[in-house]
Image (cartoon, rainbow, N blue to C red):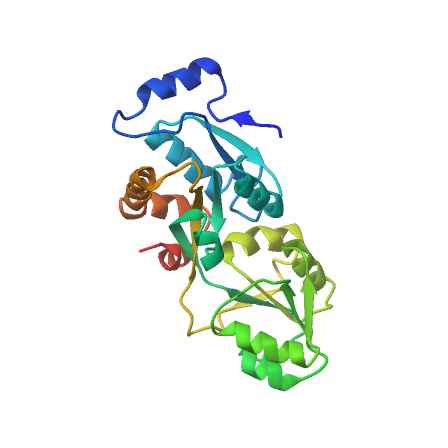
Length: 265
């Protein structure tokens, strides 16, 4: 595994260690944090997750090492104890048994619609009623929202759902006019619409007026961070959520109204 020291040089690392807040307890090894490339969360040392990780490093004074790897591998490495932290993750009861989740953003799912879909279709219910040839694409095993999930199940029962293994495949199908719609969040579709040259053709709409936005958390392994330690990280993240830091960081990537919805309260 290729690790990269976040501070860049030994002298800088030592300087950060000396600057650590005396009351803040850091692990006895550099904190191993992994990013995975997705939309505006992380791309080549940029994105919201990079900004958040750097803020954690700066405020805690702990030593960090960064790596980039696919999401599936990150979960394996966390479970094996070879990673300590990752970001932008969704908690589940199973995951909460072995990880701490400290929420820092909440995301609403929007629908991205093909220009070929009639403008008269303005809800998932009307999409279902429209029948063939309109199909929807989702990432396999991905839960969207309390509102959408049962409706997607109805579509799947009619053979009108295309399941794909990864996010990029959704945009590829949409660009090829092989599906009429997909789900995404501004943190992902802002970049992907440009990447797939769909900025001027895809219609973005909010069809879910029921579900609360889905929280995303910073994941800390319980192996590395016992409960007394995680309390200090929780206090640090809470302060970022409430002192304007998260608003400032999120607003780099989303509009003011989207940021307001995305803030974790």
